[in-house]
Image (cartoon, rainbow, N blue to C red; front, top):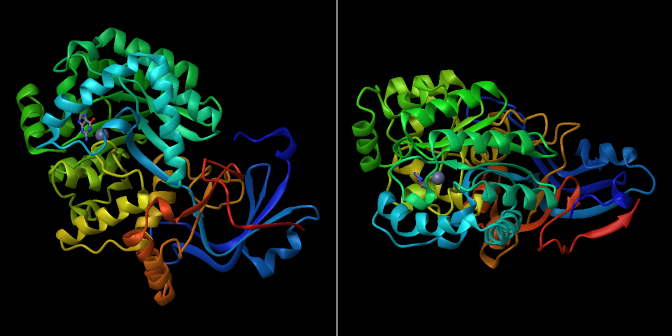
Length: 448
Ligand code: GUN
Ligand code: ZN
């Protein structure tokens, strides 16, 4: 699936309904560009033009491959900012809540990732499952084992995917078989970072699981590693569940808040992603926004584990850097469309209207901006890497009927978000090449 030498310099023109975002439609007019009969021109895996087909037809060079997806919607590949690949096989495990779920299903499963062959098997399935769902990039959790991160990096590289992961750090309050130490955890992280961060399309995230499973010494060591590598990512969980928040307060009695535990150790900055972030106060929100760190909102997980409702009013009022994430296996679907469905309903429960345009922004350009990668992925800006997906508005009989009635772009996107899932993902392109097991497409291919 990596670009083969024979096709590396090939130009492709991909024709269809083309949509991408320039900025957040919640706060700006002119936030997106949409061409009903649009085209993307891709050379050597990068976008060279995006626009109206009639206007760009002259610029399609002789010999280019023209792929006809007319009637279908082409958008940048989805970006999932918080997902645990080692939890793939314990998705949908019944539990009364987060801490029970971790002890009963998650930790025993994560133990198995000390075995490189086991990790490689799950990592390969996981990467294919992301692609099948139209997710071309993700910030992924591995386990405490360095081998688990190695496995995901290797499988991502084989598929030429732009991906981020890191080994988990936990030096207390977890089973002995998943425990590292303040020293070894950071040493192993530094070693992985030096070998994988910036290699091809891969990047490293320093990954303390959450404050309750790290000592102050381990969090301090994470902060030191982060300051030595200002362009490395950071990911963790914060304020997800009431019992967890109470536990964190008991373990860190001098901290002002749960978020403050991370702040004291220099872990709030651009490129740091905080999963859940439900139980925050005003000081926390202000600090999160000012620091440039992002929130990974995980609505299917928050509903499934009964964790709580994310406050979209407060999030917007404080201009938090919001992204959307599946959080599989606490989350119940790999599909960013299903994740939008849940996000919309969570927002509604708080009296907030989350538009489909905004959700598509959040799942594409919004995430790319939070990653500092808006000049690489998430939109069809000239020079960006050509990761994009084709959505079929007639993928199911019901969606076909509703799409027929869609009077506006918002209505069409909303139908995708409410009725869609992996069935809607018609074709996936990674660096301009069709990718994934479901790459067979009914599109017509011609030579220009
Ligand atoms: N908090 C600490 N670890 C986890 C995890 O694996 N999943 C979720 N949802 N929350 C966590
Ligand atoms: Zn998580």
